[in-house]
Length: 310
Image: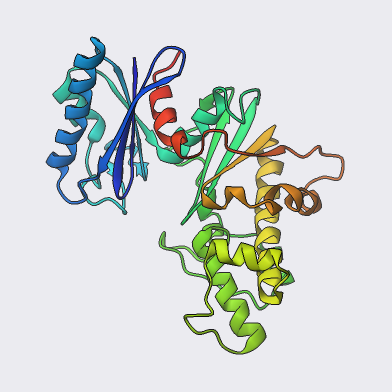
């Protein structure tokens, strides 16, 4: 059996998959956000109960919200203090007397889509999660590209192309939680889309009070209703995303780009974005196919289980 954990800032999800990749058990609990020992207790309780239930010693994979320090194997998880700075892989291995594989949650999402998902037949797949932030991952022949510092795929923290600031001189120069400026996720995420709308509401109308400040789903609805500020906001959002993905296409030449997260259901990603992307790659290049994730919210925990799949 394959055991998968998706550890987030607010919850731990646990699933068990059989050799046919069918989910045979699933449960979630609130994540211990401050106490590391409590978090470990929760993980090994799930594992030992599943061992007993399925009469086996399941193979354990864990997705976490952050990156690993390549020198110490400790995790950098700014949104989950209980896990930040901890060597989860070694500590849990000692408790359960078996190997543990850990991986960034966006990488787990991408891996899931490579197995019977939207990227099943892709030699090179890029995954982009458009949620509160913007996560990314690269899979080559169904294998996660981790990189020298386990940081491959951190597209959200690339600075947007300078051509965007030339084309839209009114764009704000944003500050990102990573310490950088004008990072992609500060424009092209749920949070970034809301910030852009507020910016253009002020820029075009002179003011924007709290009632006028919209969030992602409402901005999309306003765009589809042809509301002027929403149309401008989404046009800029799509152009920045297209230019940034164009840079990735020039570097990696992927077969497919898979979108996950709350904004992945936005139809314009699939109807409008390809035309915009074509302006940022060689004219003779065939664009990758843009797809919505097959496994949605299950992708993280399923991908964690797949870390041990052969």
